[in-house]
Structures are given as C-alpha cells and as structure tokens.
Image (cartoon, rainbow over all chains, first blue to last red; front, side, top):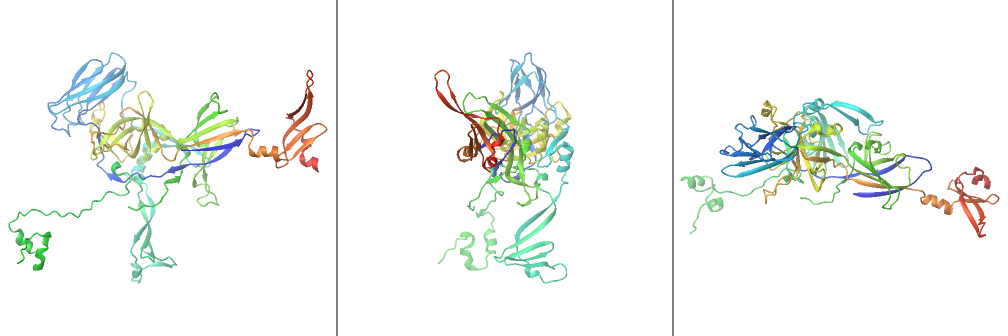
Length: 307
Length: 302
C-alpha cells in the first residue's frame, strides 16, 4: 500500500481544499468457467444435522444423505444436547422430504455444544455444533427483499434516492431479456477473390485500399486483408447476451485459476488390443496394399522371417 | 506459453460508493496527542472521480478518466494545524454465513450460502450473478475478533434456492440448494482455496461455518493512505520573509513584509523597552494584528 504525503498551508479563514489523488487496482485472471449441474449439497454427507430454535426450545433434524449412502443401514444416531442429556435420533428414510427430528428444551441459558454421533458397522462419525440459547429468532426463508435505495454513481449533480424493487428488477435481468449489440473482430481468410459481382450474394462494397490493408464488405462483414496474409473480419452481432445475464450453471474451478482456456488433452498413445479373434490376422492382411508393408504394419504386428 | 512483459496495474475506476474513507487527526507527533478517528461517510461526499473534458477525449463530463480522483478536504474537518491521515480502502460488507455446501457434480468445490436479506440494503444490488467475483471473504470468530492473516476469494456467485421438495414441511430447514435463473434471497459463493490438495485429500481448507460472521470486501482498487499536514508556514511563505520586499516605517516603527504580489504579508511593531529594575534594554519585534494599510508597498514606493 502506498502512502502519500502532502503539506497544505493553513489558510487564515476556513477553506475547503481539493486534493487530487491516484487510485490504482491490480488485474488478475480468475480462471475459466466450468459448467456443473447446479446442485449444491451439504459438505458432510455421512453425519450432519441442522436445527431450528425458539427461546430455549430447539429441534434438531438429521440430514444424513441416504440418497448417496444407500447402504447406511443399522446405523444408530445419538444426540448429546450439551447439558448432560441425550436422545436417539432416527435415520432419514426418504431424503429431503421427511427429515427425522428430535426436540429438546434447555433449562438454562448459555452456549451449548450439540453433538450427533453416528455408529454404523463401518465407521463412527461425530459432528459438533455450538448454539447459544435462548434463541432470539427462528430460522425462516424471507420471501421479499423489499425496496433497494441507491445513489447513481458519477452523476452530476448527484442523483439520489433512486429506488427499485429488488426482486422484480433482477427477475427481469435474469429472465434474459436484456440484449445488446456487440462488435467483434476475428482472424480469417481473404475473400478478395470473390469480389466478382455474381448477383447480390457475392457482391462486395466499400472497397478501400490503404497502405496497410485492402478493405471491403461482404454480407455485413468488413474484411481487411493485410499484407502478411491475415484477414481481419469485423462485424456486429445482434441480441448478444453478455456475461452478466448468462444464467447457465457455471462456476470457477479453482484448479483452473490462472488458466485462460479449458484444459485440452493431447495423446499420441496407440493402444494395441489383444489378439483375440481367430480370423484377425487374415482380416488385417486386407488392410495392406503391398507385400512390403507386412514388415512395418502395426509396428511389428506380423513376425516376418526373412530368408 | 509465451513470455512477455506486461503490467497488471490499472487505473482504478471504482465508484466512490465502494470506498471507505477513514479520518485520523493528531495535532502533533507526540504520543500524548489526542487522536480523532472517524469515518467520513458517505464517501461520495468526499471523493469524486475526475471526468473527461473536451480536451482529454472520451465523453465530456460523463466518462471517468480513471485513476484520478479529487479528495475533498472540507473546512469543517481540516481547519486545525496538525497531521491528518486519510485511509481509503475498499468498502466492507458485513453479513453472516447461512450455510456451507459443495457442488454435487464437483464435490471438491465448496462454497458459502448467504442470505441476501441480511445484507445492508444499499449493498444488496451488488449481489447479482457474478457481481461479487473477486471479493475477499474475511472471518470473525465467536468473540467478534477478526481471524488474522486469513481470507478467501470469491470465484463465482449465483442465486440458489433450497430444494423444493423440502418445503412441504416448513418447519424443516433445507440442507440442499440448487442454482436458479430467477433471483432468490440466497446466493451461493464459490471461493478459493476450498479444495484439498491431491497429496492430502482429507486436509480440506476452512471456508467458514454456518452462522459465522464474515466481512466481504471488494477488490476494485488497492488501499491507499494519504497524509495531509496542515502547516503554519510552507516554503513560499518562508521565502516572503527571506527574499520578499520589506519596509520599515522609521517614525512609528512598523516593519512590513510583502508577498510576491507586494501585498502585505506580515506587519510588526519595532520598539525598545528598558527593564525598570535592572535597567536592561531590549529590542522587541512584535507581530501587529491591526494591519496598517497605508504601508502598501506600491503606495510608499511611488
């Protein structure tokens, strides 16, 4: 972090100063986006729980994922409430629809450590979570974010007090209704040979010859042939959806941070399958065009004895 | 891969609304000096971006030049002599982790679920899909202390919703989510690092836990500190005293120093006084507060 020092002469009367400063940022690559199925699951699948509370009452739900762990049978879940008492917690039978739960009322306030232990024939797991009782509020899913107030940045004079209904406006944005045009440039092949005017299809227009390139337009695309053999093709798309409104299920895989493109696998390994067919040698002979090819076929597939 | 020289520092075009400005004032460098420390809010009242004009290109008075900002030192806050330290850093947003989760098809990628209704309303608009990529996540412990030297970076964020099948019984809290196209109150943030190294797959980095308080900070610019020292004299005023025009009115003993415009900069009374007890004679130069305008340099030298 930079530290900049200025010296200002105090005026005899109160004055407001304007001090020019420079702010900088650093650019870095956050990696490529990778698609995924959109499902988000709990971190711990084998033994986990959630809870809901109100006052000194608490209800704990067993969230063990029986969809992924279908063989989790004969497991016993025990819950220790952190105040010396304990209960047995049932295992979910249908994941996501009916979570088994057990309730408890604390007789005293304070921080309590709730501990759920799963004892199965294969492994024993334990998960602890701390809660503070009494609960001042209960969990719930809000349905309305209300109105957002904001100031329009960089406006002069400053536009303040603008409001928008949060959900509705972003619903519009994420409904992919916000389109824009975007200009692009690509490297391609010259079509100067097609400048013959065969009707309207291959017609060109706007022929421009400069010291750097020869320019012309075909089908709303502008071509610039450079002397090094490359052709720049520029144009404008319509109804382009920019990244902000892209709603595909994507994320950034941190293993790809710093990369600018998805990994590609190049392989020149040839796998020779085993000799299993009784007619294989005869059939392979049909793949050769000359007798001399026998010795080089398949890097020595045929054992040629020279006499 | 090509190797080349390139710069990664760019002029910031951050909105002043995404900046926190802290004000620190001491009258002197001594340890006993009283410290005034406060936040200058809203930052947009103190920090304004410099815009293009007709000379610099770009859309005049609309397009941000980039990098260059005006920091306003209001008279109400900067009237005293002393050292003012202004610290500008990206704005912080405080919230709480609602839940932690993993991506079903990429189990090594973990992330945080936050409830947008717990975000201050002025900052809620930033939480659009991919809107907080690059933000830094810092963590507070249960005592409210910030965990030092520990942070994570948000790599993607999208709306998510608890799975529908779980809502038939509203008393149950969902433990599964799914990305949604439409806006919801929940947002899933993937962060880095969150995956265990391949050599030790059980050593999973800590990314926080439900109900933990976190601080989200944008990374739109690098924090900077500006020190402003409000002084009684600078080089130009000292030069008035050293090299400026001067006059001495002999009859009334008024000594006048002029600035480079020949305006009166200072006036002093010159006189002698003798101690009535030990007869010691003193020559005195005393600053004159009621300026004698008749001693204007141009008037007395014409």
